[in-house]
Length: 341
Ligand code: NAI
Image 1 (cartoon, rainbow, N blue to C red):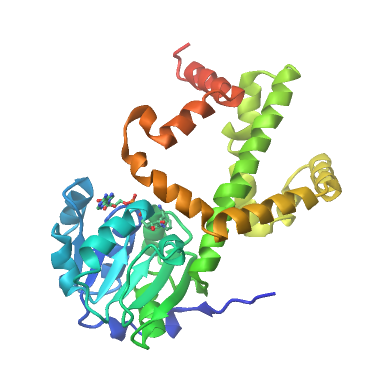
Image 2 (image 1 turned 120 degrees about the vertical axis):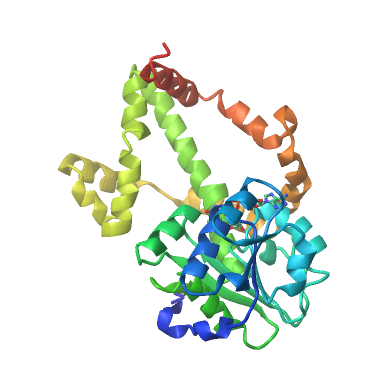
């Protein structure tokens, strides 16, 4: 059993950021939330630069009073800290080509996701600090929880301590964006990537498959589309269950259900043999995620994800998913609810 260290505000010295130029590469979900939090913590606006291509995100940063630099090399050359907050799949191209060649040899580079660092897709100099500060929340919650004076769950790690000062700076930056208020959990890019990709490639695909098959069987048994959609997800019952699980406990949330339901769920779950599923999960974790197989395959199609229509593999997956009876039924139900049918 591994017990992680947790860091709080008291462990972090904001004074370490004094006079440092902090560049946010990207002003999207995370970039806009983290940059605003950091400024509201008291880091002077003149120390902050938003490096952004010309688009609506840049306009939003300007409207919020940030100094926006469209020339990435220029921003990189003055940065003491760079938060890389553009989509994961474009980070290697943008960072390696426009930041890496001019970045100071002692700069701190911050990622919000372990993927590109774990798979060695980003280039760093040996004297630089490479840090992960990875909120476990969408950007809007990173901002709204900060505004409410509360923290948000976050992972923190130092992957390369080039200056020897990596941890204190990582904690100062975590505190500045509001990540140590609730406690930042010491982690690593390996752990974060393993958990993230396992959830995305093993856990949730199985959950989608289970909903699909439960839907098929109940539809076969004569249940209406309307009843099924509401029963299974449109009522938001599953969302509420997970909310209760977070508050009361993964199993103890069952106490909010009827006795018939509690008995059915626990009795059913404990009877199921998870051996095959565990093997399947192990296989995905070791032979698809951690060995880099998925990463290599994804890198090959990454540029196609910006294409339009059927040349974009993600569009093709959405198109195929339309064949699921569950998706077709939901479309009919939603059209009916909107008064279109
Ligand atoms: P996003 O999709 O909101 O990024 C938009 C930003 O990236 C904009 O500033 C846009 O101008 C810039 N951008 C997009 N394509 C670009 C390109 N080709 N060249 C230059 N700039 C480009 O990104 P998001 O979702 O905030 O993710 C940023 C990082 O945060 C990622 O590493 C992600 O894994 C991580 N993360 C995201 C979470 C979320 O709430 N979405 C949660 C936790 C971590």
